[in-house]
Length: 510
Image (cartoon, rainbow, N blue to C red; front, side, top):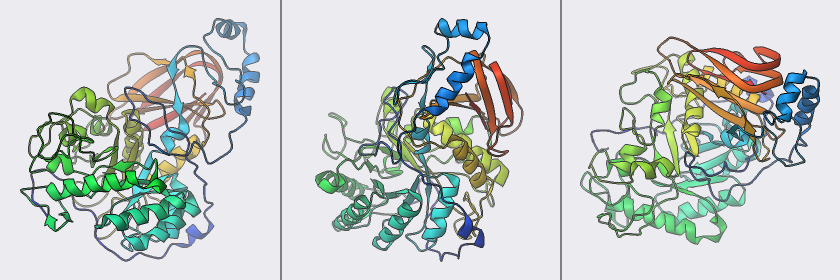
């Protein structure tokens, strides 16, 4: 291990897996399709190439039609608002847009759901594939990340067939072997992405007879360059994205240009201009940070692409590297840089721990904040607790859901959707929104809007906000993922919703 000023903790250590508890045998599996990617935008990272538009048939929009019927029964004031274009509750034709004529643009619910990932240790023999698949299906997790062991390919395919969870695969030390593994996964529909070497600041890379060290990352650069070229040259992997080597840019001791996806002209790196490394930047911006403090906006700040703070975020990995101080992308370029986080989370025992309740609320905020701030995929470390590597899991050692697993299940159940209908507009607003309150407007394929509103005050305190719905809405439901999957409040003919928020998300369904 290289001892450098900043680094993510060492994570991967082989362990034996435990048998699944009896409850797993009777848990109903949820089939999670992959919706089409969210649209491009200045605040949104580029969509992953080669993803399926949907694994399910498009719903017929009957939910929106029901809402239209209810809207017809509203008073004249609501009708006048509709006539004026303030609200359009009638269903659009099949596949068309449902929403208001003006307002905030929604994103597909399925686009958010498909960003949800976890790290597993099936490749090391720690996690059981069937038990892991059942746990991930319960929580609504769409993606897993694991070590690049050839023996694990059949396990990942089995997980995909059981729970429709795709794999982000770390490389084998041999590139041809890595490509062969990727081809097997891709042929089964189970491959999400190929990733570069994991944390070379903690795990040295040996390639072509040379080994990375505290003085040079040239072997890392050569491996990542050749891995990218090999993936792009393989027809069977067309459209499969390559994630960069994690922590490599920030920790490089010499300027080999790992702070870039493609080295631009005039960058002054030791590798040639135009060297291509990856399609996505890749960080381990652990939400716990280096200080393990539950501060306001901890998830929002950990996901900030330009912040030089307590987290190993995009800026210190790809903007101005934390170890060598090498220049990378400008802040404006970082804001739109395609990016993923392949490790993040917070432990619930030991040094810097928070309670299981706090972890459950933090991780919901984290998935939402990362998506809102432009991260294409977020992988929480890790699926379940491990006596050696720590209690980082959404599930305990016997695959029983912790609060984080239960709360994620509740949220993904409320939001459950796989369709790809174009999202519309909703004319809502939150006046005087506090700096710790954030919102994300999503829409299901049946036209239903899901407005997530969350507060990031984990150390205590509340904020009361009023969500102005822009018009009288026939039926409005409010869900709290910490309380279950049924509405905690149902409003009829409502034009606003008042919320008292503390440290977690609520969802307003319209």
